[in-house]
Amino acid sequence: MAYQALYRVWRPQTFGDVVGQEAITTTLRNAVATRQVSHAYLFTGPRGTGKTSCSKILAKAVNCLHPQAGEPCNQCEICQAITEGSLNDVIEIDAASNNGVEQIRDIRDKVKYAPTRAEYKVYIIDEVHMLSTGAFNALLKTLEEPPAKVIFILATTEPQKIPATIISRTQRFDFRRIDASTILQRLQFILKDKKLAYDEQALRLIAQAAEGGMRDALSILDQALSLGNDQLSLENALQVTGALDKQQLETYFQAVIQANPAQALENLHQLLASGRSAMRFTDAIIELCRDLLLVKTDDQLLDEFDRSLVSAKILAAKDQLKQQQLYKMIDAASKTQQDLHNATHTTIYLEVLTVKLCEIMQADPTASKAQTPVDNKKLQTLQTEIEQLKQQIQKLSASPSPTPKKARPVKAHVKTNGQAIHVDQQKINQILAQATRQALNQVREVWPDLMSMLSVTQKAVMKVSKPVAASSQGVVVAFDYAMWFERVMSNQEMLDMLKDNLDKLLQNDADVVIVAAEDWPQIRKNFLQNHELNQQPSEKKASPPENPAVVEAKKLFDSEIIEYKKD
Image (cartoon, rainbow, N blue to C red; front, side, top):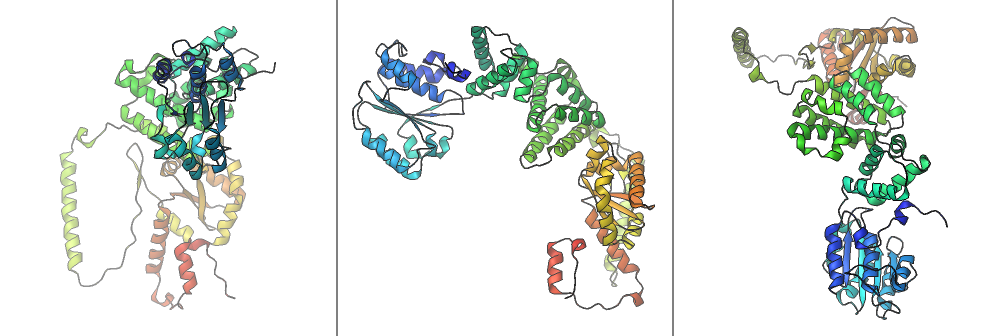
C-alpha cells in the first residue's frame, strides 16, 4: 500500500477522536443521539482545526446502522463506504473549483431525489465562501425549503464572505485554534503508538509552530521524521520549522540586554546564516518580550508549556528590564515585521531593529524631570536670559525697517548620554561652495567599492547612507536613520576609516562630513540663503525668468537631479 501522510492516517473517525473542539463535538453527538439533526450546518474556523473531519463524522453518525450514543460504529457497510468515499449519498464538493451557478443548479435538481442506500443524503461543500453571488442565490432557495432527508454541511475559513441570508439558515459552529499543549499531547500519543523515539523539546517546537492547526502539526511532524529517518530530534525540528534555537536566542538577547550592538549584530548574522527566517526571528522577539512581561507582572501567568520554550537565563534577567522597555521592544519588532512584508533586503531591517533594541536598553524610561534635582542658580540664569530675549523681540517688532531673513538653524541631535551632536556647517559650506554634479557622480561610482572595504558591522551601518554632495574639498554623506548618524558621529575611528578609504579610491585628500537625511534639506537651504546674502551687489545680476516647465519640475523632483538643456 502507498505511504499515507500522518494527517490522513490519524484523521478522526468519531467525535471522541476530535481534539480541542469539545463543545462542538458534544453538541453534534447529542443532536444525533436525540434525532434533532438540522438540515444545514456552517462550520467555520482556521485551517486544520477539524471542520472537514467533523463533517464526515456527522455524515456517518446520521446514517450509521448501529450508532452508539450519537457516535458512528465505523464497522457497518455505510460507515466504511463513507470512510472510503464510495457512498453516492454523501457528496463532497470543492467550492473552489465548482463555484458556478451551473454546479449549484445541478445540486438543486438532484437534491429532490431520495437517498439510495443511506437514510440521509449529505452534501459537504468545502470552502463555500468561494461560490459566486449567483451560486449563493441558487443555493438560497434550497436551504430555505429543503427536501426531507437532506443535510447540507458548509465549511469555510472565511465566514465574512458568506451572505447573511445563507448564514441565517444554518446552524453555525465556530472551530477555534487548538491549544499548543493539546496538540503536544496528541503528537505524543501518535509517536508512542508508532513506537518512535522523540525529543520532548522538539515536539514542543512543532506544537508551537503549528499555530493552532492539528493538520499543520502532523505535517511538520511527518516532515521532521522523514528528515531524521523516523527519529525526531531537536535539530530536525529546528530545520523544518525554521524556529530559533533556545541557545541562539539567549545569546542574542543577552547582548541586547547588555546594550552591546556589535555583539548583537554578530549574533544576528550567525542566526541568519543558519537558515532562520526573518519573520520567525521577529516572532521570537515579540514572544520573548511578552513572556518577560507576564513573568514581571506575575510569575504564575506564564504556563508550563511557554516556560519550557524560554531560556532560564533570560527569565532570570527579567529584573534588568523595565516594563516600558519591553513595550518599546514589542513595538519596534512589530513595526519591523510589517516592513518585512514588502522588503527585498530583510537583513537591513533586522540590523536596524537590533540597534534599536540596544538603544532602548541604553535609555532609562523611568527617568523624568521630577526626579532630577533642580539647580536654582541655573534656573535663575535661564530666567534672566528669557527676559533679555523677550526685550530683544519687542525691539525687533517695533523696528520699522525690515530685517533680512536668517537661515533657520539645524536642530542638534542629542545622544542618550545627554551630549548634543552638532553638524559642522562651516565645513559643509566649503564643500557646497565648489560642489559639482561630476564630483558627486564620481563618488557614487566608487561607493560600492567603499562598502566592500568595510567590516561586516561597519557595512551594516553604512547600508543606510548615501553621498549627497561632493567637491574637491570633500564629500557630504547623509544617513537615513538619525540613530546611525549619531553612532557614526561619536565613532572617530569609523570617520577616519571612511576618509582614508575614500582618499584611496578618489586619489585626493577630501574631508568626509556626515549629516542626518532629515536635516539635509535645511542644511542645503541655509547654505543657499547665506550664499545669496554674502554676494556683493555687483555680483547679483538680473537673471532671465526661469522656464515654467523647469519650475514645475523642481516642485516635483529634487533640483539636484534636474539637468536643463536648450534645444
